[in-house]
Every structure is written in C-alpha cells, then in structure tokens.
Amino acid sequence: MSNRPDLPAEIARRRTFAIISHPDAGKTTLTEKFLLYGGAIQMAGQVRAKGEARRTRSDFMQMEKDRGISVSASAMSFDFEKFRFNLVDTPGHSDFSEDTYRTLTAVDAAVMVIDGAKGVESQTQKLFEVCRLRDLPILTFCNKMDRESRDTFEIIDEIQENLAIDVTPASWPIGVGREFMGCYDILRDKLEIMDRADRNKVAASISINSLDDPKWSEHVPAHLLEKFREDIEMAMELLPKLDPASVLNGSMTPIWFGSAMNSFGVKELMDGIGTYGPEPQIQTAQPRNIAPEEDKVAGFVFKVQANMDPKHRDRVAFVRMASGHFTRGMKLTHVRSKKQMAVTNPVMFLAADRELAEEAWAGDIIGIPNHGQLRIGDTLTEGEAIRVSGIPSFAPELLQNCRAGDPMKAKHLEKALMQFAEEGAAKVFKPTFGSGFIVGVVGALQFEVLASRIELEYGLPVRFEGSQFTSARWVHGTKDAIDKFAAANKQHIALDNDGDTVFLTRLQWDIDRVQRDYPDVTLSATKEMM
Ligand code: GDP
Image (cartoon, rainbow, N blue to C red):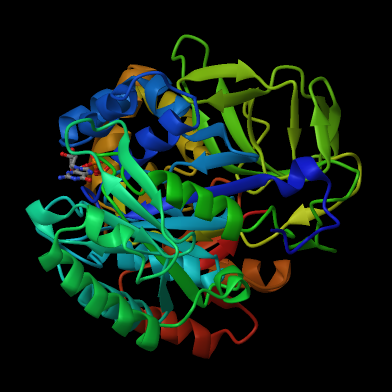
C-alpha cells in the first residue's frame, strides 16, 4: 500500500521512525527484536548491553565515555520484507531535552511502546505531545502481555482519553498474565500463539476463517475462548475500524499487543509499520518545501555528536536525507556558508557496525564526519539556497555559571563550551558584563554530563555554580533596536554561541517590563536553528 504511488520505489519502501516510551517499557528489547528480524544482528543481547548500561547515572557516564556505543545506536537501518527501516534512537535518559525534540524532526512516524500493566506513563505522554505538534503518525505496541496486565479495554480507553487519539485494535490478546497465550491478528485473520519456551520464536500462526471457525476451540481453552469471544464482539462493535488515512494524519493509532521479550507480536508490528506507516514525507523549508522525489539531493542536520574519538576531535553530523538519491563522493553545498563540501566518507549505521554509505535515498540517515562546519539545523543541497525550517532551539530552563578549575584555562573552557553548544548539548551565553560563561540546560542531569565530558574530553576540571539568572530570552528586532535595548540593559545582556543577543533575568516581571517599555524588540523562548 502506498499513498504516494508516484514515488520512486527505493523511496517508497523506506520507513523512518523513532520509538517513544517511558523508561522500562521495553524499547531496548523491542529494538533488539527489530534488528533480529531485520537480519541486522545475529544474537539477541547486543542491544541489551546498552540498554542496561544507562540504568544508573555512573553507567550513563560510562556510556557517554564510550561514544562508540551510543553513536552506533543513533540511527539503525535494516530491511524487513520489502521495506527498508531507519530507526532513529531517541536519547535514553529521562530528562526531556531538545535532542529528543530534534530527533523527532528527522522521522516520519513514531512507535509508541507502553507497558501493559502501567499504561500511558509520564514520559510517553510528553513524547507523544511532541509528536502531536507535527501530526506524526503513531503506531502503538502494548508490551509485556506475558505478565499480569490491565484489561484490554481499559488500556485502549486510557490511550484514547489521555492522548486524545482514536485507537483501533490491530490484534487482540487472548488470556492475561500467566494465561496469556497469544493474539488474534485482526488485520490478517490469524491466531498467533506465543512460545513461552523459546523467546526467539512464535509457536504457531494459524489462519482463521471467521470467529466461528472450529479451529478456535482446537487451540484455545474453553474458558479463555468464551471471554475472548465476548471481548472481540464488543470491540468490533465499539471501537473504530482501522482507517489508513487517519493513521497517516495522526488522528488514529493502531495498537498491537505482544511481548517483546518473547518476540511475540513484533513481526506483526513491523509489518504494520511497513503497511500503514508513512513513506518519506515532504520537508518544510524556506523559501520552498522539499519533496522526497525531487531528483536533486537535499538533507538537513538534526544531530551532531562530537568527540567520538577524543584523540581526533572529530564530529559526526547526522543528516536526514530529504530528497533525491545521494551517492558517496557527491559535492554538496552547505547552504549556511555557501561553501561546497565533498562528502567522501559518509557513514550509515547498520546495527552495531558503522559502514561507509555508498548511497542514500530520501528518508535515510547518514553520518558525515567533519571538523565543526556542520551544525544542527544546517541544510545541504546540490546548490539551491533552501533551508529546512522547524528545528527549534528552546530557551534553557536551568542556568548556572561555569568556571574552569584552573583560571589559566579559561580559553580552553570557551572552546569546550562552544563545541557542546554547537552539538546542541547546552546553551552557552557569554555575558557582555563581567567574565565567565553562563550555561543553560533543560534537565539538571545535563550539567553533570557536561562537567564529566569537559573533564574527559578536554582534561579540564570545571565547576558549575548557581547563577543570579534563571531565565534567558532571545531578543528579536532590527539591529538598531537590539543595540539600543542592549546598551540600556547592559547588566542583563549576553551573546549566545551564534553571536545572537540574549536577555538574562530572574524575574518574569522583567520580561513583561521589557515587552512594555521596548515595543520594537520582542523576547522569545525559542529560536529557529538556521
Ligand atoms: P527500556 O528501558 O524501555 O529500553 O526497556 P527494556 O527493553 O530495557 O526492558 C525493561 C525491562 O523489562 C527489562 O528487564 C526487560 O527484560 C523487561 N521486558 C521487556 N520486554 C518484556 C516482555 O515482553 N515481557 C516481560 N515480562 N518483560 C519484558
């Protein structure tokens, strides 16, 4: 099925998505099974090592140290049936960050994983809201059905109510907890039976002709069958039928029930992503949008990862291809600087391995090693001055002063901080009064991660201390208006790493005052990265 029959086949078969979930719901386990069915890993357990590594803060640091691991998992490509899946990893830690938001600007759909016993949890809800801002199609996987879980109707109701989205069952569980034995695959009229003995396979897949088929009673014990029949009748009557167009516009989510650990329901979900998930979508850009089927290559940077190898200070910019067919060695124009760059060693992340990307199509994610030219929000094209829009930078919610442990090393500190600012790991403000830097983040954990990375990657012990400011706002207006405003408010003015003017304060009252007293400047909590 394709809603864009005009797309070149290579583009039409691509599905680029992220998994959103609350920690512990089973994202890592599901990813591992995706890769297993995608033929990308031979053994279950390779992704697990990573999943468990981020449980504690110190382990998270260890993982940050071992950049190789977290990087190889940033975007993974694998084939399933006739589809090419690009799975983009959302950062694992629970601090909501811009990183997460930007990751979601690089995908066309999201798979929402919920724990059958817990339903919609806080982090899932937050991530869902971000997807909603972009009307991303969402496919839902209700995991851990092998354990005591909630009633199926209750789970569906909760999603409908908390997330205000229509839910249509793609499968229906039979039995709960210890008695859970499998699912009825509503979309394909099949009875799928879970194998509790072998976690890497499904016991049986039985074609069914109707709900009255005698095969039911051959496979399902009478007491489970009775309850299942009652449920499914009610479900068919009360719940909406799957409507592909509503899935694509984000107003309906199909839900599959399963157990990632037992590899159960995973293939049906993958098939669903292929069949009902969107192909690469049109990218909003200025002065015109970019369509995936355009011949010319365009792509944008949504993530930068620095210092993967501390000895080389290299960086990898993750680029989502928005259009065309890229081949290795192509010369692309870096629209911001108008300079050409030959992309000779792009990498693609095939599960655990980093490989040279010989080619890439719209929808794919490639990594481009560089020395800092490529920043988040940058667009690469074959010459046309188009810039992808909609990749925001948020005002940080926490501000602290940052000082080098050794005052002689202030220059080094500046370099390190600028690098992290460009990577998007923090906001760095240089006050126009006094010395030092003010660093802003969205989640408190980020200060600790930064301190540890600066020490590790630059050999520079640093201290973060409370700042007299609590809010930062970008100042917009004509250059004259901004200069006049800055001159009159010197004690509150700083420049960000792009040299843009920022107003720092601790009082909402101050922000209101500025808006009243300086009608020709506006203060905003976001800035577009372009
Ligand atoms: P993540 O934090 O979302 O990446 O979750 P993980 O994939 O690491 O899973 C969290 C825990 O739930 C781990 O101990 C998994 O073994 C367990 N788990 C994952 N899937 C299932 C499942 O289908 N059934 C059961 N019983 N446990 C599961």
